[in-house]
Image 1 (cartoon, helix red, strand yellow):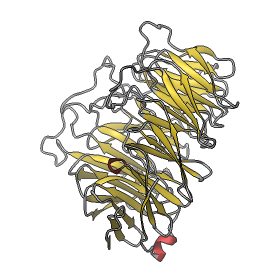
Image 2 (cartoon, one colour):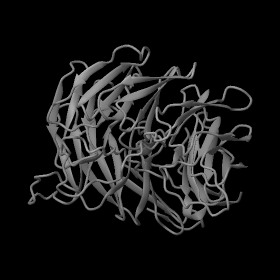
Image 3 (spheres, rainbow, N blue to C red):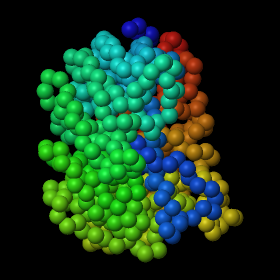
Length: 518
């Protein structure tokens, strides 16, 4: 490993006083590498929902592909084109860049803040960095893998080939679609295991004692509690010759049950993780979304085909579910809970529908509300005070062709107190988004546009900050409301913005000890 450069940028007093913040991702509000198998098609203008449900998957957007990782002191940012990782210290904003393997794809930090784990797709290895000293341990993994998931305790990394993700394909003579790598990030030990064909998702139990690998036919349960991982495979598809796509998995907080949704099935699979038995829970026609409530007490299934919600008791999932009829004229396939567990948003991303429904969890009241355009992705702010909707470029059937928003990208901020909204016309598609944990500020960037967009959730206002080059992704520094933007620049460029002080500072050429700009 070679250290390339060190630069320090002064931190304002206003920044030091900022409240806690963190990265968030997409419609879930929490980063998860899972892919639901949903289509990326936002539809052509004028496309409308099919009354018989045309079978399209709901879309859950992965806004940030090269998501930075945080500890209580540092931010780690992948520079994939330059085979490096940059560490930003908080609050000094000192930047230190180190070389890692070829084509680093993702970096994750461990829960104890001691290590940063980098998956290098080009060199087929992990670089395990000491967060403080940046000393590196390199662990080879199997070739042709393209995704990594880290356990909550930070001890285990599972590297696998995500069948839903595009990659460069095999250049060798043989390739397995069943093998994955398991790495103990503390000891550096590597284990190769065989799981179901073409894994779609990997998830850990909350106590990190098991890793669950989902493929269409099987759920592979990997016991991580012993010295070496042990794999058991459970059949989850009733038709092994033509299994339905496995799109989602949710795990009960106590690790007792796994709930699996398979596209097109009129039930979900319930796996008892202690006995490894599988049961089917009826859910109505064509369930298209599965989520746990924020308190972990309920598993909620949206059955788009029968226009119903099925609410299961997580502690007793075999009991009769509560069945809630949705508004008869609505086309609803997704659910998004507010973090405070008081309300949920019901909507679709599979058709061009320009309205959504709010669900009051205390009273059960369902209210249909308008939007300016159909939905591409949805996020509730961390404090539950506002709803952020990024819209499709395409329009709903019958949309006003004279509207300023017709045929354009747009987003909306909506108060979840009185439901007033601020609809904003965008010049390009949004590509990355982050919130401060206090729920005051949001930030996003757009494709090939040199701007940082700042959202003030207190008044639903927007401020546009000019950048010196096009952004790659955006995040929030640990323990602050301070945004950072990694930009497309051959020498490396990072900008930091303090929304309270309205201060932008930029480091350019941090890999080659180049200039600091203010």
